[in-house]
Length: 296
Image (tube, helix red, strand yellow):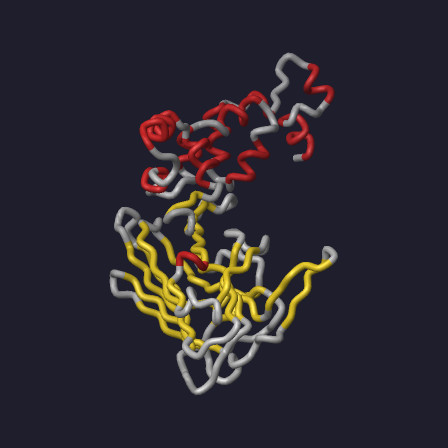
């Protein structure tokens, strides 16, 4: 077995010297493409460096079309604008389309963006705090927009103190077929950098241990999720799971509505940063931060 592998790779000295020597470089391009179809995109790119056969197969449209979401033409409509953008999209090969969609694609006046996960080719989405309707956001006694590099949108909404806390959002989108999870990315405490080190203060953090925060999610095709939990763990970003939904028709526009609220006016609450709402394919573990599953 070991000798056969050596011959196949062209590394067996005696065999390689003979006229009948066969190496991996002699593999027909179509066969190489069949191998690539069974790999994830990063593995395809690595294998393309092995030899000419894999390098040629790694550029084949049918290989990359199999890795793209079924509604990639709809997704590409968000890339570029005007006649020049349309011409570029028409000329683009499937590998180029995959590479473009793997980078953030902004929409909604730059307050929202989506991208393909590079490993699995599945849609992820983020909506900034500025894309959400936040009670009292225009009153600087309660809220302030705080610039920070810890947000992909370079800004978070920081709550000092309020009686009625409610954050509402919605998005219309044709999601590729699959099950998705929606999260609110929040942080208890105000953070900043001093002498190059991250600092966090909890002076405004209060009220979140009195009553749980309620999360709601609904879709235009009748799906609903309702859960609640207490906010905790000051000093770090946490993803609070609001619920899951299923997209079954990639060409059907789905309206998502979601909210996060603690509207018991018997006490104030404060010291909370709202960064964004994130949508990931369920169970794929794309997030690096702690996830809290709410109770129904």
